[in-house]
Every structure is written in C-alpha cells, then in structure tokens.
Image 1: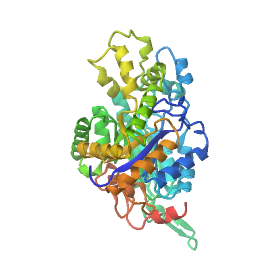
Image 2: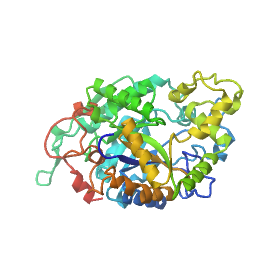
Image 3: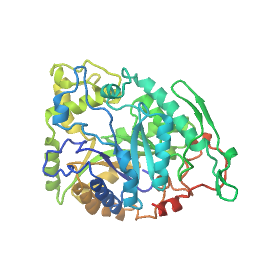
Image 4: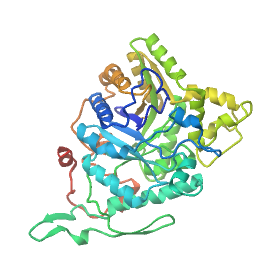
Length: 465
C-alpha cells in the first residue's frame, strides 16, 4: 500500500447482485430502476469519503447449452440489468466530488460510438468519469442477443480489445489539438481546421476514417479500469489500465498478484506506481463482534443453491445442476477461464456448489468498527493493494451508511482516508498531478497531438455541473 486508501463502491444497476441477498428483510434495492435511488446512494458515498461509484454491468445473463434456466429469473441472478451509463450525468449533478466508473465491453461496442459517449460524459461530469474495460459478458446470451454468431475465443477477444483501446485513444488524444477551438465570432471560426486531424485506421477488427466529433474533454482519455485475471488478462491490464480490480481473498496471494501486475507494467514501459490495484471486499460491520457475525451468517445463508449455480453458469457457461454431483467438472468454455482455473484438479461438483456459498463476494471482512478497520489496514499493508472496491452486502443504503459512519472515521484517524477535497478529475483524485490528462508512460500518450491551453479545464467544467 502506498499512501491513503482508495475507496470505491461497486454496484450493478439491479437488485442486489453480489450476494444474492435480495430476499433478506435488510435488502433495500427495490428502487434500483429509479434515479432517486442512485442519487441518495451517491450522496451517502460522497459524504462518507468514497472516491467513486463503480458500476459493473452485464449485457447477457446465465445461459447454457439447453438455454436459460427458469431459476435465473426466479432468483434474479444477473437479471434484470439496466444501463448505468444513462444516469451518470444526473448523478454527477447531484454531488460535487464523487467520481463514476462505468463498465462497457469491447466485444460488443464500436470504438467511435464508445469514444463519443465517454468523451461527452467526461465533459458533463467535469472529468469525473472512468471506463471499466471488459471483453466478456455472459457470452452465450450476449452473442444471441446481439446477433454475433458464436462465442469468440478468449484470446481473440483480447486481440479485439487491444485494437479497440488503441483506436479510441487515437480518437480521444489524436484528433483535436488542445488549442484547436477558438470560438472566434469575428472570423466565423469555431475551430482551426488544420488543428483537427483525421483519424485513419484499417485494422483486423475495425475500419475508421474521419474526425472525432467531440471537443477535448477535461481528461481527454477517461480514467481506465480493467479486471483481467487470466495471464492474457493481466498483461492487457498492465499495458492499459490505470486501476486494476482484483479479487484476492488471501493477502499473500494478493501480494503476488500485485507484484506480477506491476512487473508486467514495467515490461510495457510503465512505472510500478502507474497502477492502482484495488481489491474487492464484502464488509459486514456491527456494533459488536457478535452482532457482525450474526449478520454475516444471515448473508451467507441468503442465496439458494439454485442461485449459486446460476451465478456459476453466468461466469463460466457451465450449469452445475446438470452435472453429476459426485464427479469433477469436466467441461470448459471460451469464457470464465480464471474461475475454471481454480477447479482444474479440484473438488467434485457438489463440493464446488457448497464452496460457492462461502466464496461468493470474494474477500470477507467481518467485525466491530475497530476490527474492520484493523483488517482493512492489515490486508492493504500485507498485500500492497492501493484500496478497496466495497461490494454491497444485503443491498441498499444502510450498509454504506454503516460503513461510512462506523469505519471511515477510524480510517481517517489513521490517515488512510483523506479529508474531503475540492472537486477535481477522477485521474487527479487517484494520482494527483496538475491536470487530468493521462500519464506520459501510458499507451494513450503516444497518440497525443499539439500543445497549448486545454479546451475545458477541470475546475471550469466542475463549476458548470
């Protein structure tokens, strides 16, 4: 861990997703489809010292060779899933400092359209937006929903993602020079044509000829997140991401992952400190240890066996309920590689299902406020992670209110969470610096053109939100 802890809150625009605890009386996610639900959450997170709200997103849903089991809908497993990008600008207008990260898939998006959407959001949020890059979302359902044919092989999706990222970075960084916009009414000149460059790209997956249609935004390139766990995924993250999301449950194992990611970043010409590594965590805090343990036991017991199996189906394309419970898993698909790697020579299907109950949600931290603060600090110190993505537990606002009221003050006393700062860009929140631009060692920087004054400085943009 270097410096203060980065804190993000991870959500899906749905009923409670991570723990499948929506049936518990403590769940308060029935308003997930309304703007007011998320506005209230944004206020709680900002007041409580969180750096950003992270929206996971899925386009598909659990589907196997025999279709989608009824349990997917009955148990609300990765279904429903609304589009979070539609509410980000409204949430940014609700709060002044909180940042927002949204997931979009390179498997289904087109570079120009994604670049346009995120650049527009970067303007509307005053530079407080990040893109979580994924290349797989419940592949079997996804390809059927979008008419993409068959599931694309794992490494081919990364090939497409590599070309995708380079092309969107060219659009963000290489089309408009910083001083291209002059807005000169006397000369009837909005922009100097010679300073708005055409992008010509003819690659394996994409063809594009033309100029980018969005003027330079506060960050230009939104802050980039990624969570690849396979060897190819880690290499892509090390070359591309500024924040990497991991799911370590053991501090020593997480430390090895952090070291591997930073070494890979150096191999790509970057610096170790160019990556912020954030670990997912499920926190249950109670007034006493006994209270916290009771709540954790209820949370663990909440999902049915069917719900656990449907989560696994969504991650891997394999329906454990259709397999012999006394035999090891003997299937493999083109997605969920990092999940399946855990079971290569592992337990039989029945034991996998039983284990899912204790592993759903990754790292678990349970205790009274002081114990939770100690565990978070200890894990960060031992593992070297830079912060945490706090996952919803029962689903709703109260779990975050408890965390911000009971735990954050202790972290702040220890210097692990900073005092509220003036509004700035997401990249500056995470890395500091005089502006919100991507660092010189990042792959996007090589596409940068021109020099001079930025079109929209972060402070000006924030003031206008």
